[in-house]
Length: 459
Image 1: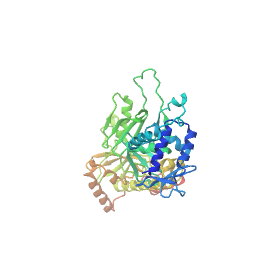
Image 2: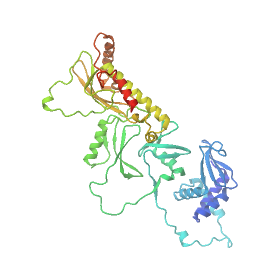
Image 3: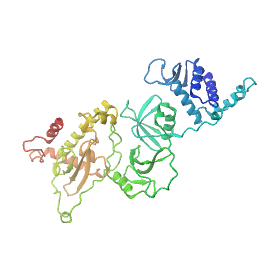
Image 4: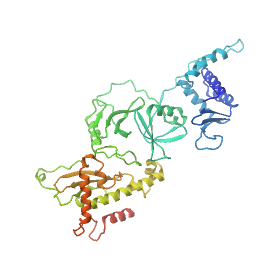
C-alpha cells in the first residue's frame, strides 16, 4: 500500500523511463525523487516497509531503520536497473495505475514552445533489444522469497518444494505460479537469470535426440521424472510420473528403450523417502528385490527349511551388523535391525541440526557423521513354519525401525505381523532352548553389535 505521493512518484518515474534510458541519469533522478520521503509501506498486512536514504533503498519488516538481518539493501543503481526490468516486462504499474498514467500524461505533458523536448537521437529511439532471460532453476539452489532464503528441494510445472534451514523438519510447498511470481519480484534472485540461448537453425533433430539425463523428485504424490537436457516453459521437461503404488505413467511417446527401462527399474526398486529429516516412505508398496539367477539343477532343492517358529535368513547385508547367509531368530534380527536403524536416525538428526542442509553436511566431510550420510541395504527372507517364504529388502537408516515395524507398513503383511509378534513372545518364554547362532568376526568375539561399534569407532 503506497501513500499518494509515492503513487505519483511512480507515475513520474514510469514517464521518465519512456524516453530516458541512461542508467546514470536515472540513478540521479531516483535519488532526487525520493530524497524527501523517509519511508513508506508497501504491504500493511505483512508490515513490509521501504526506507529511502542517500545510498539506496532498505526493504524489510519491523523497524528497518535499525540493523536487521531480515532487511534487504539495494543501492540506487540496482534500483534503477530493477525498475527498468519491471517496466520492460510490463509489471511496474498496476491496471489502475496505467489508467491514472493516461490522465497524468494529459495534465503534465502538454509542452509549451519553451519546454519542448529536444528531438531524441536515433540510438535513443532504437535501443538494441535486451536479450531475453529466464530463471534457470537447479536442485539445491538458494532462492529468496521476501527477505527469507530457501534451498530448492524439488519442483515441477505444478508445485515447488523448498527447504527452510531455520526449520529443517518442515518443508515449504508453493504452487508453481505463485513461486514464479515471488521469484521475479525479488532482485536477489537475479543471479539465477540466464540469457536464453536460441537454438541454431541447423539440421533437423535426429531420431535419437535429445539426450536424456533423468532427474527424480518427490512432490507429495509419488515421484516426478524429468529430463534435465530438455526445457519446456523454462523448466526441465517432465517425461513420466511414478505413483505411490510404483506404477509408471509415461508422458512422452517414443522414449528410448533404455530410458524406459531405467525409469521402470527405479519405480520397482527405489526406497526413496520424503527427505533427509522426514524418513516416511514415498511408496506405499515395498521395493522389488532382484533375485539372483538359480541354476536349473538347484531350483528344486529346499533353501530354507521350516522350523517350529518363524525365523529370518539374511541373504546379504551392506552393514556389519548382519552376516551374509546366516539364520537369525526373529526376535534377534528385529532387535539388531531396530538398534541399527535408531542409531542412524539419531545421527542423521544430529548432523542436520549441526549443518542445516544435507549438502553442507556432505561438504563438511565430518568423520563423526560421514557413515550416516546414506543407508545400508539388507536383503532377508522371512521363513514361516508352514514353509512359506517372503523376501524383502530393508534399509538401515530409513527410520522404519525393526523388521516387524517395517513389515507392518505394508498391507500384504497385515495378517502375518500379529503371528510374528506372537512368535517373538514365545521365543522369550522358551528360555531352556538354545539361542539362535550369533554371527561374529572370530571365535572369541562377543555380541556382533559390540564388534560393529568397536570397528566403527576405530574407523
